[in-house]
Length: 295
Ligand code: C5P
Image (tube, rainbow, N blue to C red; front, side, top):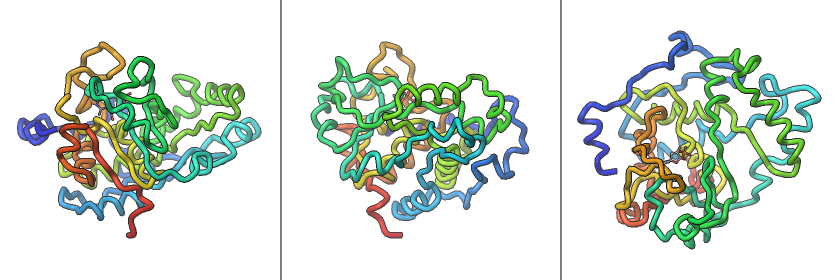
């Protein structure tokens, strides 16, 4: 992570580009059914930890898609969404672990420490089979990439009516097959409010793409838990070009291309309540849950 200022100085900053085919006018206009609006409050790289935490608490409320939102109404949707809220399903959580899928987790021996948390969040297809010594094997929540849905809200509202992939039908079918599994769709406004917060706290222009699944998951757990330990989001001394610990594929994905990942990491570094030694040796960042701060 030490090389972050270097990357910026060398001019590899992320450009303020809209994805191809997205008209400029989407910027500055109210966006979509979820009430997403540009809310950049004035950029600053100088806000205190408390100011950023309070902004996160106020401006990025955890929200999942529910009956009546956008096109999600009518009989067929009534049985689709879980009846309990995410908070009710999970119950109160004191300590939580967020396990990024970074290759640097290999040979970490962090498994027992990760499993000692009340809840563990993993991402996408990250498996624990064969890797439990390094990543543990407890999985309480899994956050799966939702790029299609997120894109739809800010950029392509028409996609809801005619999606490239019939996400909603697939979701309904899955819910019918697994009615007892708590399975939520994070609201698009949550992603974009988080994007706004990262941009508010970054002087350079961010790519106009949603925050990474990792960053979404960190903010999610800060909403649900009293304390959150995040592993290998800020890389340790084990930093490697291996993208995921569970794949052989080498692609330096630590700083991201599509997501504003470099700046997400910079923000999380500012919120870290642990020591830089913890980052270096364990790849561990410690964050306070949002319920623990008074604004
Ligand atoms: O690649 P994937 O999105 O499944 O990984 C989950 C998250 O973990 C990413 O969105 C990113 O925030 C984080 N990550 C990382 N460094 C890596 C791999 C993943 O910070 N090398």
